[in-house]
Image 1 (spheres, rainbow, N blue to C red):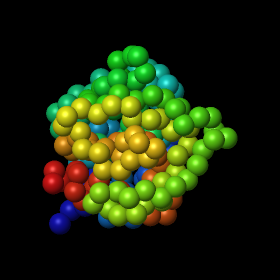
Image 2: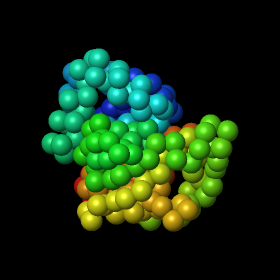
Image 3: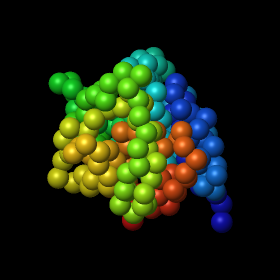
Image 4: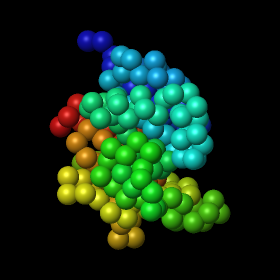
Length: 191
């Protein structure tokens, strides 16, 4: 059986960590820098980093519309931190960038870099998981078709909508591969 391929948006952020995690889960992983890099992918990861920079670079490279189109057509996608911001329908008072996930998020809502923290959360379908929050967004609202898989401080921290998964934290910065396995094994496969 041929290995499947996951693309990692490679404009800025935690690219190498996601690539390593995907490979450890038995998937091929490639960097996505231009629209043509989306061809032949079975899934996509939008990493943590700086969402404003990712927005600017993806627009400059003509990649933003290609990302929107691929996700709208059903490409399984996992957005972590900044990646979750890119997926959200609403960011603060503005319309989201990709906007395919029925979420309202607030950027950097957990504070500045110095206020970053780690905690263990119980994740539905995964179990107890160590989560790293760095200048993390807060998911303020979710639509009726969005399933909350974990929460922190009374707000969703990990959500799923069909074949889309969004985390307010950075699973790629730890050593636990279970959340990547969950995405690549269940979410991307559609069950």
